[in-house]
Image (cartoon, rainbow, N blue to C red; front, side, top):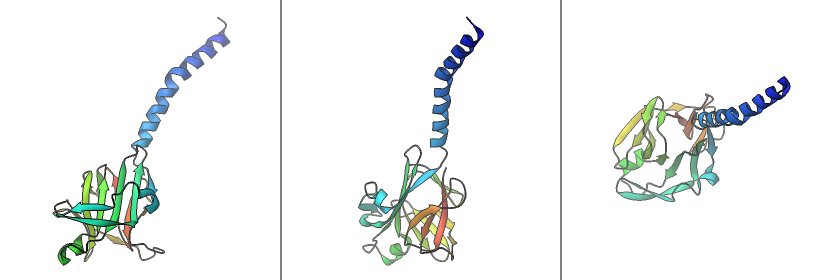
Length: 179
């Protein structure tokens, strides 16, 4: 066999055997890298339930104030404000939103397992996450962004750091990432 034909045959075999493996590995690495697509309220409408259970009651979700993250492997994080008017005034202060996560998260450096939670931005500077029974599971300091143009009641934005996002309520925010 001529040297050129052998080189061509070798190249074709290499491409047929190894390139698909490398592509699959790159795709898997990319899918789990933590990079996500931000889902706006219209993109979360089919994903977030219209009402959610928390601390013995059911509350409607404000669908216009629901955002999410969809990672490369299709795992989701959803957050939405709720109407907590049926709850006690003490609980209303703490329970402002609902967080659903299919993946573990870090929030301001603290780990939160995958699950369903209530959350709130509470005085003086705390972001509080509670389990479905209303028990505190995570408390971190939130940050303020006074320069944020047109803040919304709730949104998710890029943080400016790779694979890191902001969960924002008006001008208050915490930084979240996939663990």
